Image 1: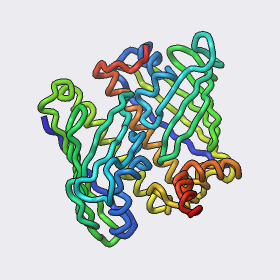
Image 2: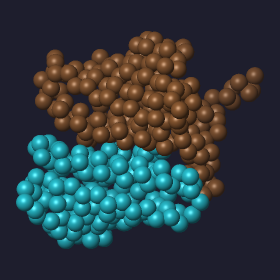
Image 3: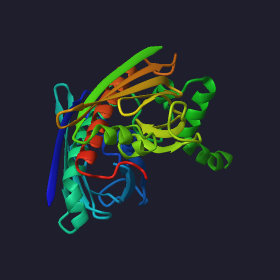
Length: 191
Length: 154
């Protein structure tokens, strides 16, 4: 059984920036609400063949997938697929410059033909996931248009800290929490 | 402080006692609140006014903790809890009413954001995102219950 979800949104930011943020399969943990963990598992620069590990929770069920990039043509086309876990899926992103910024089209296709349990549950899941993806795209739009940092591992994370950290100590803790990679510079500084 | 209020409602095609029992379980909510990653009861004894929970949530990439406490417990009609988090003081009230075809479930959330925590630019974005998310989560609960999916942690 194949299910298809199509979504589109206009984000009032330049196409290069929208492509850069939306196609980062690590930063998606910041705008895809059901995602609880994301990491790049292959070394080297991002490109076709780069693999990730995503951990999501939906309807109380943790789901681990291993998406692999299949198309990477900045700043217009991007795609990835997953062939691990309970069901496979393919995601295609298209980006186009428009008068108001960038039109971002997303198409998600799932195929559960080989999995009976997934076939039974998929219509229920797809309906809920489709609404969730609407919410997440709107969230990405809101975050980017208000200048909130979406991409991970960026030194200045000020908007997030001012948004969520209640005190100077909390501010520092949030800063450290979101920028622990800085510690990896210590051996380099010592050289 | 700035107040964020969201109201959402849904009709679930199940008896009022079952909807109340499922929707007010502050541990099982991890199964239908998408942003919630962990939920456990931290006070002893049966569920009632004063029962306390520990919730961990992730929203916009930020992990947050809360300790909601039940403030109203009137099965199967009314339920409420309050929660003091790093970003806001929240009060959430549920009401349940039998209607033709099931149960009318209404949720009202008032979040009073703390000074200098959420910037003025971000407030509308967060409020809008939370309202959409709550509406969607209630529909997840509806679809799970209408389709016989186990929601309550037993």
